[in-house]
Every structure is written in C-alpha cells, then in structure tokens.
Amino acid sequence: MTGVIVITLLALLLGIALGAAAGRLQSDEESLVDKIDQLLPQTQCAQCGFPGCRPYAAAIADESAEINQCPPGGESTVTALAELLNRKTIPLNPEFGVESPPMVAVIREHECIGCTLCIKACPVDAIVGAAKLMHTVIEDHCTGCELCVPPCPVDCIDLGPA
Image (cartoon, rainbow, N blue to C red; front, side, top):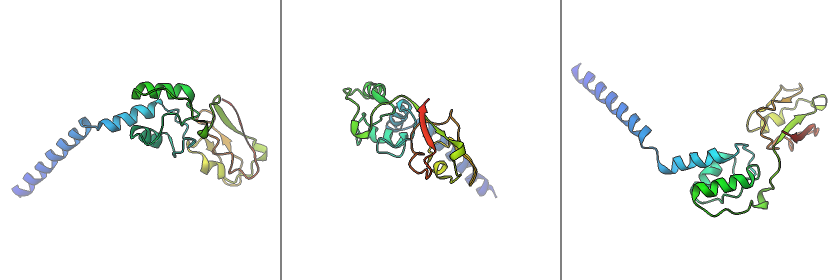
C-alpha cells in the first residue's frame, strides 16, 4: 500500500511541475503568432487565402505568407504588422481584394426561405434562425466577411455599412 501512495504522490508532483513549466516556457514562435493574430481584424473571411485570422498569423510568423494579404485590415494592419515584425511596409496586395469600409450583412427577412445555408457559411455564428423559418443577422457579431452571400439560393442577403 505504501508503494501505491508513493507512486501516486510522485505522479502528482511531476504533473504539477510539468504544468507549471508548460505555462512558463511558452515558445517564442507561439507568442509571436499571438501578437500577429491580435493585430488582424478577426473577420475570419478567408480573403487572405487562409481559413481564418489565426492560420494567417501562423503563416506570417513562419514567413510563408506576406503581411499584405488582409483586405479587411487594410493598410493600417499592414503597417502595424511591419512595425511588429521589423519589416518594410508594403502596399496591400490587390490579388486578395481591396480595402473597403466595414460592412455588415442584412437579410431581407420577408424573402428568406429558411434554407440554413447562410448559417452554415457564417464563420462567427452571427446568423440565427431555424430550418424553413426566416433568419436574421446579429449585427454586433457580423464581421462583414461576405461568406454568407454566395450560398443564399434566393439572394436575400445584402451588405451595408456597419
């Protein structure tokens, strides 16, 4: 019985030590990804060629992507990223889109057929509704990414200024 208690205490102490070490020894690359991610607009629009802001931040950190691929962030984000990474500021790459004012999706509810395709497409869960019932956009959560527009079969989603 003493052996079981000793092994259990040893495992507990090692677990605590490993947990504390993991918290203190965060990798420099991970903290760089965090800093880059904080500068991005969090629209999760995929215009940069990545499925969201965090994967794009990781690609910038490992230098597999340029700092000028985020149209929603615009020139100000490119400038902030250049300063953080001690790189030269470069113009926004038009291949990924152009900078525009913040937008928000609006569903013309009387035309909505309740197909749920926009709900599935929304990366930030800003659209609510149920199958065969009208949907609506929670404007405070909408990032204006436009990903809900193409799947709509009745074209009842508009984008307007935020």
